[in-house]
Every structure is written in C-alpha cells, then in structure tokens.
Length: 216
Image 1 (tube, rainbow, N blue to C red):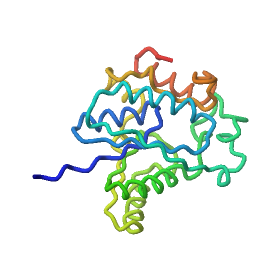
Image 2 (cartoon, one colour):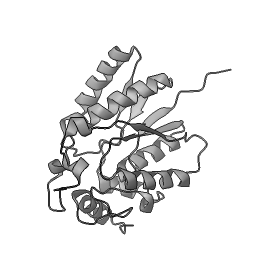
Image 3 (cartoon, rainbow, N blue to C red):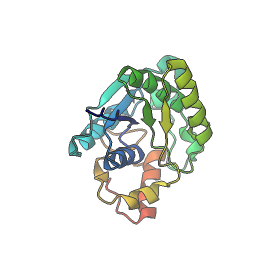
C-alpha cells in the first residue's frame, strides 16, 4: 500500500492571510495540520476564539486538529506594546510600527521542532506581497529552512505561497471564504475588533480595495 503524503503544517493566526492559506492548501488536495503559537500577546484570547470558530466552519476530512503551542515571550520582549496593550500602533501608523522582533524566527523554530516530532517536514506561512520585514523575504525563508534542516537532521521546507499576492487580491480571489470569522486586531474589545488600531485600519482598506463589503 502506498504511503500517505505527510501533512503540511500551516501556521495560523485567524487573520485573512493565514486562513486563506489554509483553505488553499486544502483545495490543493493535501492534509493540513494547523498550528497556533500562543505567546502571551494581548490579542490572542480573541484571536484564538475566532480561529477556532473559523476552523469549525471548514468541512474537510483533510483538516487535522488544531495544535496550540505555548511559547511565552514576556522575558524576551519585555515591556513591548504587544504584551502591555499600551501605545498600540493606531490607524494612522505605518506598517513597520507593528513589528514584532524576530517573529518568524520564533514561529518557525518552534514549529519545526514540533513538526519533526510529528513526522511533518513542510511548514507554510501566509506572508503576502509588500511585507517590509527582514524575516519575511524569500531569502530568509530559504536560509531558515536550510538552518532548520541542518539542526534537526530532516529536510525542512518553508513555504510562503501567497507572497506574490496583496491582501485585496487575496480577498477577491476567494469569495467563498467566511471572512466574518477572521480576526485581525491589536487591541480587541472583548472578542470584537477595536476599529482604531493599525490592523483594523489595514483590514478596512483591504476590503475596500477588493470591492468587498467589510464583514467586521
């Protein structure tokens, strides 16, 4: 009997980019193992709530159970706004204001260790075009994959299949996705978007540019 292909681990946050990647991977016919890293950031309770609702709406036998991995960063990030909730970048801030130092280094390192233990060697992220950060470039992903492969003695692949798409183009290309179940906010009010932070503003602009009514 032929061996079943191993799943692809998709790093999910519950935002537009990562859930779109998850759906695309499922439509490509493979099994998908969603992984959420909980770091202690102020938006994670609301984010995880909406992510779990989104995943429950997906009807596919190829979608595996969500794994939540606790990776606290308080001692690493110190008094960062993502942990304190103070001076959160507002709607008028530039994209670079939301930088979380070494975020993809952190995610990929922990994800790779967990994946190898499960026999998974492919990790996918929902990085889009225009991402300004150094740990989101094609070169970074290639070099990170090589480093992880050497360290873990497994051929780790790091994929960013959406990196040529903008957020509006992604939204337009997937009209059947329940965008109302996605969540992107830096300072949530309970489980609701605050409407005033950098991510809320980015979300509004993306739906407006896509010509799709914002579901928030």
